[in-house]
Length: 226
Image 1: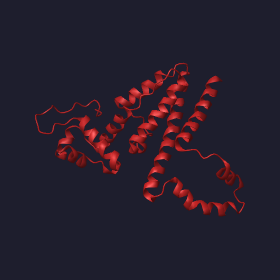
Image 2 (image 1 turned 180 degrees about the vertical axis):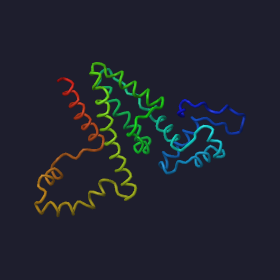
Image 3 (image 1 turned 90 degrees about the vertical axis):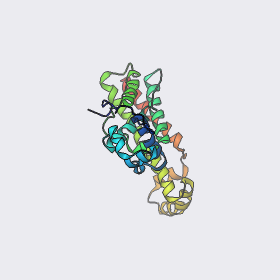
Image 4 (image 1 turned 135 degrees about the horizontal axis):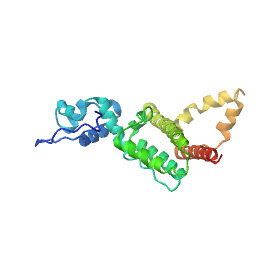
């Protein structure tokens, strides 16, 4: 029986009552501050001021806890819109915002489909909003948007982590390595790349994300019109 179907232990009159919801909320607070490495059943029990063994009546393994955490965040992703394009844009944007609120979420999305109630509700909201899209194309279209968003947000989170690890923001990094690039480009070995770096518009993260999303949605629209 999967964790979402397994009944919780009966409520007991104790100083620190427990529930899966409270356990998951505590785990998310730990992960939001210090990342997934900070999450363990022992540490979550400490936050809740209970013994670790009490958690095992609610959650059997750390993997179950991670699944519950992911599903809780999927509860923040509720795509809306009056057309398939609006729904897919909303899917992309609400997923990105969820990752920005919970950086660790970027490490856990993707892979096997999530089957928790919030993930299924998110899927229902997306699929039901794709009226007019051929049935056989619904899942490939959603998968394409998910793949774009996952790649984009993981790149953004990697940049955040690099800033923290190096102590340099993007501008400081450019100043540090700019002279090296100028010397390299001066050799004439990379003329096309040099032109783009020197002369093309340099977009910020929001502009890059939304422009890339427009490219993807335009491509989907062109394919659907065939």
